[in-house]
Length: 311
Image 1: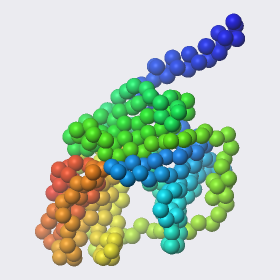
Image 2 (image 1 turned 180 degrees about the horizontal axis):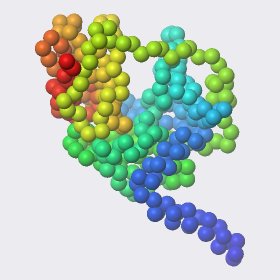
Image 3 (image 1 turned 90 degrees about the horizontal axis):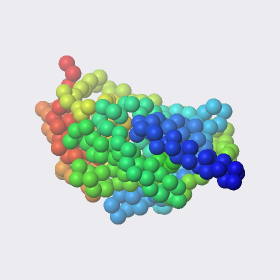
Image 4 (image 1 turned 180 degrees about the vertical axis):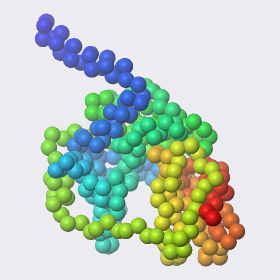
């Protein structure tokens, strides 16, 4: 009888403690788990009728975070992160490295960073509990503070606090995109692929290009929480035309702004895809502006119209 009571106490007390956690506290524990936990997760990324399976491993080797991502369909495509350097290994292309604190294609960067930075754009709300990949999960909703962005929701593993599922929702609450774990294992030791990754010599991270003209751009309006993350020179895929590039983010969504002199090439038509990705175009004097991102098209258009050249 005593043994049964001890087992019952061990089960009930942690659950009771979790019942007292706020949505923000759950997210803080998620952030810590994503940085410290060694785990392997098989996931699927769902966009409309497109399903993309992938596997992700994370661990810590010699006080450095190390991660590995591999897409399982199509041509071989892998990525390795050692500390703040991500190296991409793609089919029929030489390996290249960039400075980054995460591998794109998995969880948002803010999930393993400053959760408080998201409070400008979203409210954190506790939802119900459900079963994802055979594990009990707690739902946390990200309710937008305005109409300028989409909503999100994440299920967290109630044992490890790792994310199990992440949904992007339209303003009408319909599902636009989903990243979901189908199998997860928390590991006692570092996977061999991660220990080998830190031993290898990867290409040096490429330097950020500077705009040769020295132009500086600003925005007279951005939704609360959005800020400029990157500003450099890009070449358009296919045409090779140089364009000025500005990356904006609120921690959950990334928006891309491209600026080029008028007449360099045809602008894409305004477009909204089934996964919520929108493309809008605008002309400003001698410049053409294209804004791309997973946000309402009217938000992107307002951002394009607010772009200004600093004097």
